[in-house]
Image (spheres, rainbow, N blue to C red):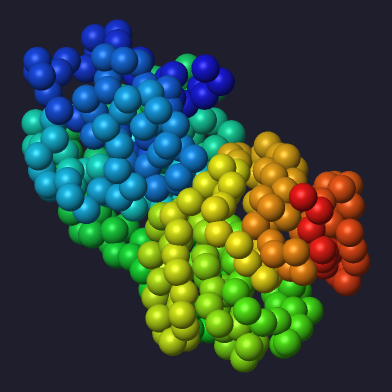
Length: 340
Ligand SMILES: C[S@@+](CC[C@H](N)C(=O)[O-])C[C@H]1O[C@@H](n2cnc3c(N)ncnc32)[C@H](O)[C@@H]1O
């Protein structure tokens, strides 16, 4: 298992430093596979579809959101703390909310993913905590008895959905939460207004590209948004409802392919999975899936960081490929006539 934070998270329990009543039903927020099999009864929450499905495959009890979990009900609430600060604070606050008064909250982050800030936030919220450093991670745990309720409410409120100045609904922790991503903005500047038919948006995020398409391309009949982040997709629903569009939303891992066929695919594909690991293979997989999903005369419009190696797979999967623009470290690419 190459997930040090997940390994470190179990240490206080496995070493007996936290005692649990027999049969205690815990929660794991931002859960990831693999779980040791004796922890399969934990209620896992994971909003990112590939991680969610990996948990399903190992037999875990997993859901995309935690709304059905009752406040104050759980003797153990564990969490793998994400890097985005406002979102990580909201998860700490959510853990405090879910935990029974005599229970324990256990949080873990890798040192290179904000462990120091996580520890500081944990201490502020819970008043104190026990810290363990292992596997280049920090694990912190405490009972919620001395939690700062005002701070807890403040951190929960700060991560609620909100409407930005540009009219888009957003939320802490989703892609490009505070402003339109500059690469997506560049793609929107180059998308032609005469796109028509059915359009798919791969890795749609909060629906920025789809909203642009339905607003500016009069001949587009419908858009299908495919996005792995369940939270982003809830925001995309609001953003497309506001635009009064015929939109279908799919909580979906593009790497597994898509069944439907489209006239156009637009995308700003991901190339990072976690932390600093650059993974162009995921973007390349998006291109392959786009080629498979397009009608014979279909076209792909995409934007990417200029250094990412996408041209080879584009040339293999499309008869025509054009470099449309290059600006500020990004490139806009257009490909047509997919090869089967
Ligand atoms: C670079 S962002 C672009 C988001 C949005 N299109 C925009 O322009 O703001 C890439 C998006 O792909 C999503 N994503 C990552 N892996 C995915 C996968 N395997 N399947 C579907 N979407 C994925 C991310 O959650 C993120 O929202």
